[in-house]
Length: 360
Ligand code: F6R
Image 1 (cartoon, rainbow, N blue to C red):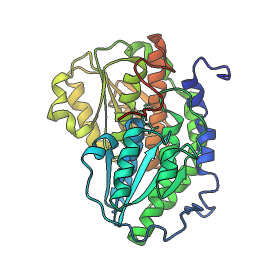
Image 2: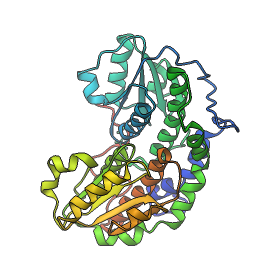
Image 3: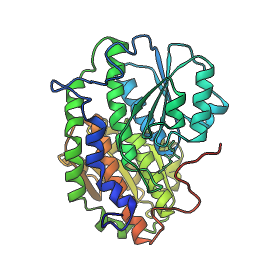
């Protein structure tokens, strides 16, 4: 049933090319435009601001979309649903509230979605499960079509969420600002090529040989900026969740405002690069290397300037920077998986965690 893989997590990591194919199938035209059947051009003309509500890994997908929308001039805010349910941000009928939830059953997300509904916002859910509570209760739904995910740690649903959100981002940008984003065509082309790129990455990753050297370190920090920031947070969440290693994700700029005090030669730092904002993140890499820390750089394969500045280089296929974060995430999934495997953890069912969290 695990199709020859030792764990569902590894099976699901390997299923990502086909899952992504399904996510984008029929949703991008040949001439590089978004084609969402239920959301034709103009659907979001009246929207002035976007709120994302979600938890855990889904929150990181939402943060990814938030960064892209802000880049494109659209006001966007990603909230953790547990906080939004107690301290909701003000909304109006022009606020589009997007609940991002793989299961569609997460109690915190449903509570915050209900709060948005009651207060008159327009609501949309981006979910994997047709017929889920979120799909029934939101005004509209977009399905990510990742297929069932058994491993407690979300992998293919994260990449499919980001791919689906990229389509939503491009649709919102045209509707709200009146013009497609500057590199909309390049982004959508990169998205179409993403399944192949993920396939190549998985086939060539050296994460399994790296893992034994870093498993058992005192702690692990993950840093990035722009879309690489949520990818760093997701890398840390995945590692702590399945390996029980101490791991934290930070925006690269925040490091020097406190966490740097914890950096020692026993603190491997994973730095995520996409081809945007690399120079600034390289400065942060210098800051930690001068404290004796080893840096693992995850970056596009042609990024020689990154390869030259880090201790270990984990390349991803070259692509558009807005899409590169998805590939970096896959590389980090593999790192987490192999570290957890070296430590002989219960990868598919980590202690204390449930696949669907139905209490607030
Ligand atoms: C982490 C993980 C959780 C979920 C979170 C939200 O690997 O799976 O952090 O992402 O519990 O779940 P959904 O997306 O079902 O709302």
